[in-house]
Image (cartoon, rainbow over all chains, first blue to last red; front, side):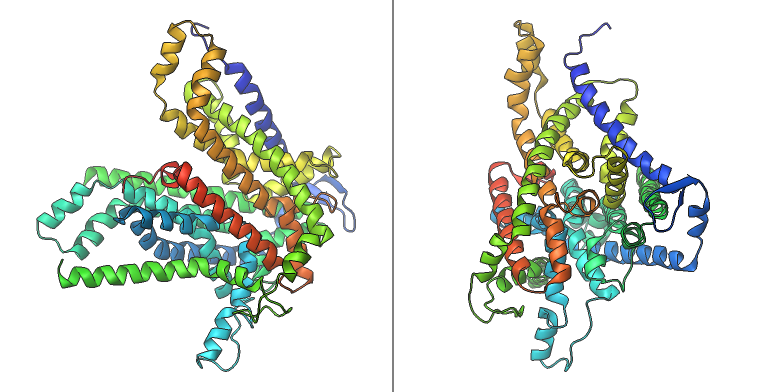
Length: 285
Length: 269
């Protein structure tokens, strides 16, 4: 070694150790997906490919499709609702407004899945806030079902996803060179034109990464579909749990976990590809 | 300012407020129902009572689960601070063979679904006969929260002027002395911020914990989940209110001392 590398070994060893433990955990999922399920037992048999052929059934296609649709809808609405907040968060003139916005926008990220899901149960339930309010306003006579529906699940999932979306969008908005907007305005563009033809295109990379991160993140949501879906809305996470803890079919649960993992990896790879193409286009135009 | 600009600005801020109401309404409802005197979760509450707080704080399952959560949180967030800081230092300063692979492994818990991680540790734990203790839970949490420390410390390291360390070394300080007298004090805000995020995320982690905890080691979110599935009274509202109010307080304090916008990299408004 020509150069002195203080702390190299001391810092490398624990990192490698922990990485190996994680790899071992993931390897166990992979291993179980190839082992035979013995009904009524937690023990598994020998090598088989049967678990992978089992996924080839309409019900699992529907669950996957549902997971995709719910994640897509969540990412779309989270984007729609987060953009104004991020914009205000970066551009508000008063410092205290920005501080209030950042605390209100980020705190939900740290209250945890259970607290947030439970809160939405109180809001969306048949005696919940929404139904009570609509009834007392005379809009409806009887409670409309929101719990145990896809709409209810998406309403809650969007709120969960927003802090992450807001962080990613705000980062993108704060990196805009404001001279571009000023130049457009000086050349006679109306504020609307500036927003749609300058601000939005300049934040497109942030929009794209926010969309895909939320999409991938929502694909692995568990407690919201579990409690608000109540078994009527099934995402892939809920089926993994059912297979693992109700049927004790650990090998098949392992296969479904791998499917979820590769779906998440696939969507992130797709984002990399799209972002690269986008940046190329922006550079050439 | 023209009339059009004014109108647009009013519309914009109305939309912002409406969206913020949507984001915060659930938390407000939970806090309000937690003071309900009856078992019905009425909103607005029909009176004022602290009975659900008393029940939440004296319920044996929650007491045990809270203790478990504190053990897991204390161990995993402290280990994560040490691991994340040293790992950030490693990838900030050194290039070495296998670095890409190591980075992939330690960043990937952000992408791998929590139930896949939890399931993996469940299988690993049963393979090693460790299903009844805290070791596997702490390990799973350590992996899930370390990336947040790594990121926070990496940002701190990028903001440190390398000349301080060089000057100290030129004046004859040993690498150990440079590390603990110069580098660590300069990146301490990042380490503390990272530790705080790690602690909160560990305390509230649910999905992976559901897989790796046993009934004796269940953490608070798991105990809350089990309670929600069996009972419908405002006890969970009381615990949730305590968690919401304490995290909000921590966020306000963190924003004041550490600057949330600076930590998140959105501070050139």
